[in-house]
Length: 479
Length: 70
Image 1 (spheres, chains in turn red, green):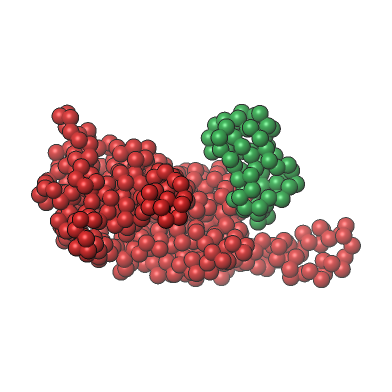
Image 2: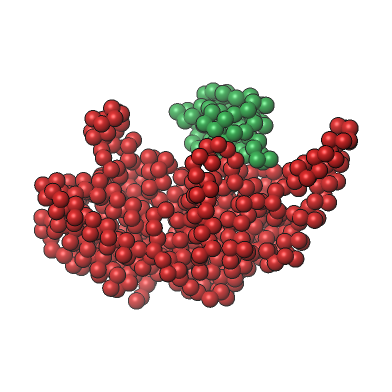
């Protein structure tokens, strides 16, 4: 396999002859490298077409619905064409991409079409964790065509895309709710509210670029060349005050070869934004980033963010993508809403995901790591390959002041109010030395090494490069 | 018109803008205090602060309106 370049350029424009933009051949040709398209199923009235081609030189499979025929509705023949794409991808061990624009199962074929759509779902599930699966939603994808993308690893949606089980008309007739198709299942609905869509794009061309980029990141991961990893001073992202929240994304951008929005791709950027999940490269090799974002919810873990990260960790593990985990979290978000939302059940997914992961996974504690969130963020106890901490980092059950207010409640209550702050500070310093300091964490071996911000890139690269490469033996269930 | 709402229970530590102020994307509108952290709430788009719904010292619940930017 020759891959010309890790950068993804705009797909070549479709041929000059005016063609229906919904023609699946036109879409597939636009998706793959110019001149690389080769159809593997017939152009017929099945409303689906499968092909092989190249993405920046990397071989891949793709299929597209034909929205010109019955709105792209899938019957037995169309589903069989998609199965051909999957068989080819699994046999060749290459990524498979779906360009979706379909109303779902063909009504006229009745239960036969339901059976066929179910077979596609089964093929997707069998391929899960074996070959990367990317969905690019270009038009309405309803019913069975909604669950198709949802079963794949990453879902990209163009501005014109919509995903729903039942459309606005059915919703209105059953529940009386008035809503447009776009409000119900467009980029805002799924990019921000539901988390169904991982990446949103302003138009079809941009959506295809993101689909190509993601397929290349997962399908052509490259070798980490430590000599190519230049150190930068990353410490500038931290505010002066230890209490002040900050955006973690500049730090993510600093660690990766190319910033988010260029060759790196953030997944579910607007859903559970207190946790950043992103694919990019370090030293040329694909890595996955999991990072608390203190700017949102103070960087607290909550039920949604834990589940979001758990799925991402399992995806990376299933494809052998090493993980870099950036930690700055005050803990789990307290609240009735969280408890009733299943923060215990959904938080357990993150513990499970990290503990089972066999890929190299390196943790960097930038500022603080407290309590249950400390454990969940790829701690030593869950099997982190290496745990780094910046010199100012704190690792503890809780902050020292909060700890002494509980541990020394009586002692603090016994002194006059004006002496309380001084005593509290004294006890906190003692507590920090005893339980919260970095030194203690190093003695225990839960932090391996204190690294300077200006040495962090090379330390992360070295840790990943020297760890044995591995890949989890599991699929990527859409948690 | 963008309604900026609190993401979590917090107290309003500082109000950084006045009604009528022009803000750019990423400008701090208010700073909340929660989980012993100062959490800036930023403008997602450029615009004018049409109204401020909170004052320093207020306690806000998740989903409460903080400001409207147009």
